[in-house]
Length: 412
Image (cartoon, rainbow, N blue to C red; front, side, top):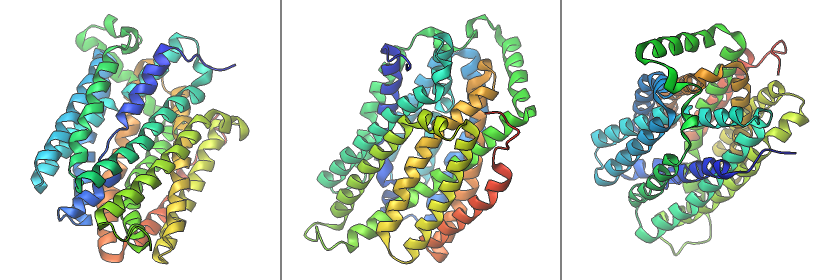
């Protein structure tokens, strides 16, 4: 037996597929370096994005839970599109900062909300037993989008000879996603969103939301997921300069310009990387059953994660780029295996009514981690090198695992 692959499943999968057609993503660090930003300045840009998201995260989650999740998602897509347009037309640092704030609006209205819609659908259709399998399958579609994204992005850079055009090209899939989201059934807006009057509904939802953090299992599940994801999202960007170093050092493709060589290598590596990540997401439920519990699955993937980060940094320092890339390859798979498992754990500890708010709280904590880590890693990369920055982050992850691990007393 398995979950139903009905029309709504394919709508959910299409959302993830289209959302991940962010053609700029494999090249954003290289784009910023190309227009003259340092690693520290790039880290500050990411911090601007994360801090902006932090201010919006919980309020937008509450709005989604009280006013409707579909409207929230449509607004998210519109904010992303505005961000892409600013990135394309303006290259000054102040414009990049403004684009990051617009991007943050998109993130804040999206994070947690779509997952809450999926979980609501599973509740309404009596499929909650399949949470890790269902969410893992939709995330697999997202990773297929990322794999295709890498090839299209590489082709755009190769043909245009510039990283700039990937931003305007990303507008197209996001417009298509707005159409897809508009077709979602209204019952996914929330458990009783239409029956909650104005301020009273917001107050009641807020009370349930704050109660989440008085429950130790919910609190630790959110912390564990948020901290790991925060580290991953900062560190994954350092794969781009590694790929550039590899492309320059390869004894092949030497007749091409450097940017075109980088585009070919980056596109191929990211394509294979996200194909592997897609397979990992699809097997999240199977992995939980194999290790006999969600808690064990969460803890084991954290240990694998910090080990791979340290290995990646060490071999970058040794200029053995193939091992660094292989470590990142496995790290991406681990993170995409882990994510559906974490969402399952959190969904078991947070009430359905405030699911979007609970997942938004997780995203908020993730943004806090990124806001602190991004400029610190950027400063260290400027001063001591990328390898040192990555190793240091991996060691810190290993230290944080001790207080962050899910205890055996927490039922899976």
